[in-house]
Image (cartoon, rainbow, N blue to C red; front, top):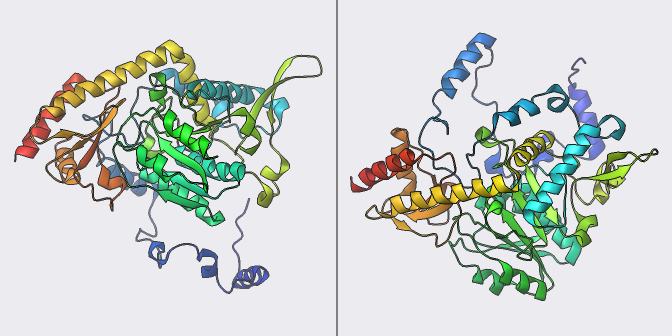
Length: 448
């Protein structure tokens, strides 16, 4: 297809039709500080070979997770992904397939989506799960919007333990429709403050477990308090593997689960694409975002699969839609499903237990260093430590020595005043030698 650029007259006519004076009027919701004047400072012309060499040189500056001792988490975790996963998802029938609008030619895609939904429902302890959303943060935002529709209230109380990026993403999405968000002060372990913040106007309470500081919490009491006030409980999970060892959100009384599924089947990939898990109670099914795949039989009584419970509003009458998300992270879904199928329930539990054991070993090694204070009282595979120095500066010093020691909390929330807090994660990929290297190097840096 040829690209036919617009003429100035074309642009003027289009702007006039929508009542805008200039193209700048289309970006009034973007803060002035976030706008850029002029072009990005990049070379205007370069050959393919030159571009390849330049980008390769830039990529070579990265210290990747598989090449150095690696203890970063904070919502994205390094796990072993079996070679089978990549082998299957790179088959052309999966890699190039589009969204399955025509069930008669998309039975394979529809079946793995159905299996994915079943796995997510079992994992979260919920009754139903959709065919995925984009990532965990947008799943949380959709959960808040859903809660306001269900309760006909307009306020979300967000725990101080929820990942700051999830909070920001949710605020960005829901403010446009007038939803009020009350994000509590960041705390390592103070869920009692969440209960105290619930009132008659609260549509939902959002908690995370394990939270951004790694604290694993039984949120049953929060669920009871929320339900007593007529509000819903949304449980956020950024580390899906944790549900192989900890009590499921459904068991703790969650009404909605918004989780990030990257940990299962999907590599870090420098930040994406990831996969949003979304599960809920069956009674709330009609208010959920996204799509569902259902099992049925054809005219001959043979088993088949179709997209179901998706109204025309989802795709056409967008202003009337439950959600404007009409697709799903299909390939990432498949990777998740394959990995889960390879693990099975027993394998997932063993993997989760190994994660916890590695984290305990890391915790013990760091706790023995003078000046290091372990803040997280109970954890799965991640915990927070308080350092006697600025955490970001310590991390940079260790990175210069090819050790990725974790994520400074200040990187997630620069204005929180917690510049001495470091988030440290360990998974089944963490070697005992890596733990020893981290502890030795950190002790030297703090003593300097």
